[in-house]
Image (tube, rainbow over all chains, first blue to last red; front, side, top):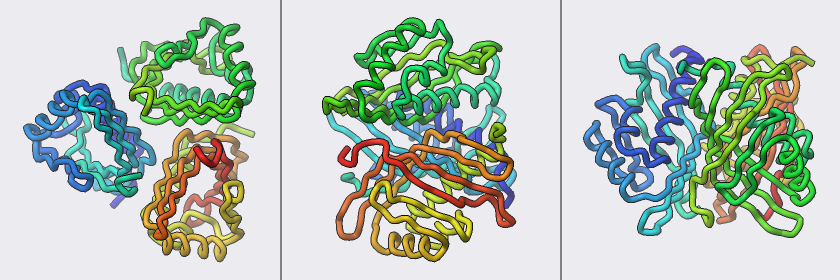
Length: 139
Length: 139
Length: 139
């Protein structure tokens, strides 16, 4: 396993920023999906949200999110290269995610992202994203 | 519109960090102003603070801030290149700004910065800074 | 005093991320220590925690931390190069540190890190880390 090159680090960090920006501007499912491969898996089950397998399930989730939320705010810090095998880069980062639903409910999660990404003909894309909680749910 | 070069991204991010550091250390108006062109515009009106046009108005604002606040803390995350025309770079970032006034009032804003910057004879400077709220005021 | 090279900035930032990751995953004293020189000093006295001088005292502190805490979460933002003399790089950053103890106590600090680091035969290491508070304790 070699050191992750700077351009790979920058590319994966950029996916994280672009993806959270798409979510936080309620830009709709396509804007979120633009950051993922067609067969991407997103696993939010560790914090009580769905696990999604592939474009269709991911689209449904973000379409629903854009419809039900009034605000989202995901701040990405502590990017940390985990591995690079010459094709797939794995990077972690800390994320505090806040949200406010139309129904008036607030969301607050303190998590670590694990993102696996690779370069495609259409640029760098995420093929796997999972979260793990870093603080107790109530904090 | 071409891709923003790495050195431009780094330069604009650095302005954001130096500017918030000047504000957060209550270093006074000149330290804040050092990050802006003479004809810079700062528009904080979207979160209930002034819109300032040029050095004089910006100086008054930060002189007053340094006088009235005991603490400031602005954390910059999610830097996101927006555009680069070969001269002006536009970058967004998320900022949580906290403050405490001598009168005992607390301030908390969750915003997105939009910063336009260019290289001058005296280094990279911000010529336009605006904020847009990302969460409801009370959160 | 010359401009800090990009690779030095990246190296010191990486120590910050790896160190906080070791602390936040409760990975134990050795994982934390891997980021410091043998004669490193860590001074947390400005926020009511110990000042530690050298490996033994640092090890005791992080062994105790791993034993007593259930959660830690330290988010690093606003990395800011301060100086570079060709051997030692000094960088500041903002950190919000959260924690939860087994006894049920919560910790929350808003601080600025000052980290001095140098390249050793075993990679870049921190030789001095101190914090200064950025917000009043209660906020």
